[in-house]
Image (cartoon, rainbow, N blue to C red; front, side, top):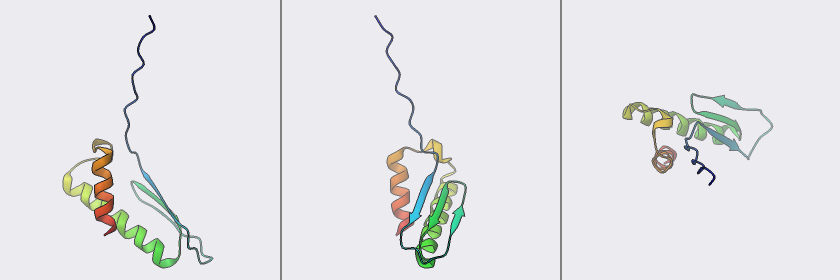
Amino acid sequence: MPAKRRRPVREVVGFLGVGLDGDGHRRVTTTDHFLIVGGSAATHERMQDAAVKFNEALDRRGQELKEIEPTEIADLLREAHE
């Protein structure tokens, strides 16, 4: 009888933000958990703000990204985007 395969543990290791409303400038921002590329100045700034708020929320929790369940991460991202 073949051995059962274990499901790999899923963990979120980072995010990619892509702005699609470019204005001819190349914008790239990296943080601990985000790679943000493209977008107009306003769009890129909104994505940067969301990344900062998300990282601040992680700091307040005292947790690493890999320690949080994906559903909680989605909630934190929604809050950061508001």
